[in-house]
Length: 140
Image 1 (cartoon, rainbow, N blue to C red):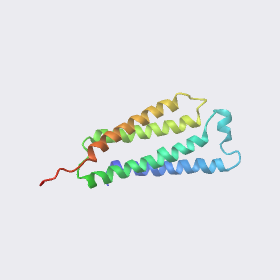
Image 2 (cartoon, rainbow, N blue to C red):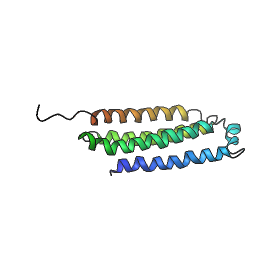
Image 3 (cartoon, one colour):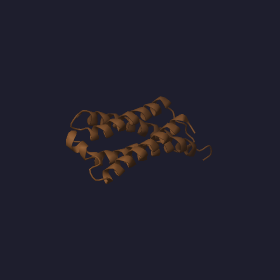
Image 4 (cartoon, rainbow, N blue to C red):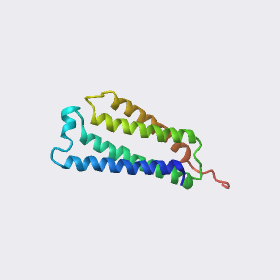
C-alpha cells in the first residue's frame, strides 16, 4: 500500500477517535458546554465534521487511491496533486473542526479551513477523473 493511502487511512482513524471523543464528551452532562459559553463554539457540528470529513472522507480517499488505479488499469498521473489533496484535506479539516469549536474566538478559522478543504476535494476529483476511465480495447 502506498504512503499516500496509508496516510489517509491512518489520519482517518485519528479523526474517528477525535470525533468519538467529542461525542462521548457531549454525552456527559455539561461536558463541552464551556465551549458554547466561552467561545460560542458548536461542538455538535465539530463532532459531525470530525466524523464525516475527518473519518469518512479520508477513509474513502485513502481506499480510492489504493483501489481505483488497480481496478481501472490507469495509474495516478499527478502524484503531486494527490499529495496536495492529502495535505489540504488534513489542514482544512483540522481548521474546520477547530474553527467550529472556537468560532467566537477565531472567526476566520472556519471559512479558511472550508476553502482549503474544498481545494483538496477538487484535487481529488481531478485525479479520480483521470484514473477512472475506460480502458482502450486492443481489438474491436
